[in-house]
Amino acid sequence: MARAGLSPRAVVDAAVAVVDADGPAALTLAAVAARTGVATPSLYKHVGGLGELRTLVSLRFLEELGDVVTAAGLGRSGDDAVSALLHGWRRYVLDHPHRYAFVPLAPLTDPVLEAAGKRVLDVFAAVLAGYGLSGAEAVHAMRRARAVVHGFASLEAAGGFAMAEDVDASFEGVVAMVVASLR
Amino acid sequence: MARAGLSPRAVVDAAVAVVDADGPAALTLAAVAARTGVATPSLYKHVGGLGELRTLVSLRFLEELGDVVTAAGLGRSGDDAVSALLHGWRRYVLDHPHRYAFVPLAPLTDPVLEAAGKRVLDVFAAVLAGYGLSGAEAVHAMRRARAVVHGFASLEAAGGFAMAEDVDASFEGVVAMVVASLR
DNA sequence: CCCGTAGGCTAATAGCATTAGCCTACGGAG
DNA sequence: CTCCGTAGGCTAATGCTATTAGCCTACGGG
Image (cartoon, rainbow over all chains, first blue to last red; front, side, top):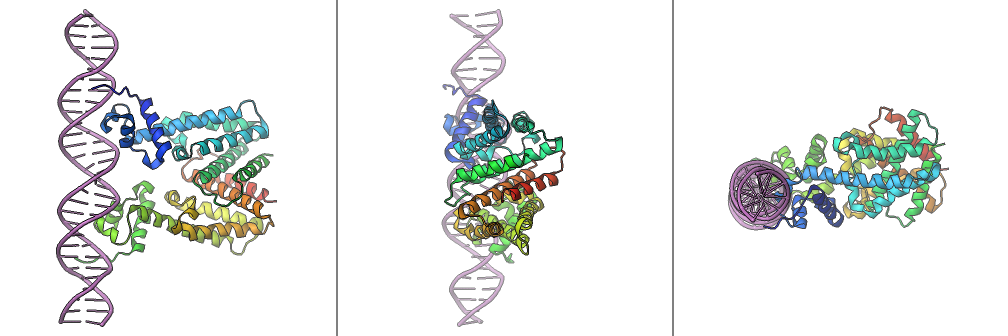
């Protein structure tokens, strides 16, 4: 019996491929097994079960999002940095619409996701730091930014903006609204 | 065999109870059947299947949300009305945190949900009408409001605001941000 | 009072996750 | 080079889910 040469990483890779291809509801151990050419129970040698695989997929996406927003923030400051962060976030979601359902809304509540979540939130904090907001004001500002970009991206990815008006223009308005709220 | 006296409405009622009690993932035909004291296949006499039941639950919640925002908008105008709409939305989600996963993001794409979705969106449009925005500007403003309130409410309901700072205060900032973007 | 049908039921099928237990390919120690 | 322990496959079995088929009866209208 030739070995498939799987690994936890390879299993998550296949899971991501399943999600990208057929959406979040299609992520099943059976589908991942089929894609990796292995029997379903064999996956348990690499991953604790479906629940854990879901968490690992969430972690993967959260890390990718962390990369995106970190890159967006680098070398920018002030309104420019805020705009880049928001645009980067939206772009990631639009590039991978099926993935967003797995991006955790409360990553800090799960030990596995905590570090990656903190990394994303730290970028928000860093970008907003330049505005000289007090501690509490900085938290409120961060929540505004998170709410706005999460809300817009999830609605857009779900097809919630049905009207003909240009969605890019709507997003520019969103960015301007956030920026204006920071002074 | 005494009849259970079910109806589509009663099945949806039971489904809502299951969601409220145990969360969205617990909504299964088996759970609804247990709650109504009936065998699982009997539910098919009232509802097309799990998929249709989910849609009906979504419809129920969307209608309730429509009631809430309609009531919030009544007798108010301008910033007051916008604030009431946003607060009403948030309150509904906080009062029923398990339900929000079933509130559809793109109701207009499903014939069953279209009317209820339109009703909600019409309230947004009506509340914003007083600002005298042009057609495209009105659409952008509506998208801002929807994105903000959906993003904030879903993050809050998921436990995504972990820091100690007062979430009510954060939401007041969100409302102020939206209102400021309308002039 | 009778009877058609709506609304229950049980039985059967199929897809899913999960556990148990077996079997072998592979890589390192001698 | 050989031996062997274990990691990484496998099949079989269990149990939960939805769904379909087909039966049986309670109930309300003629």
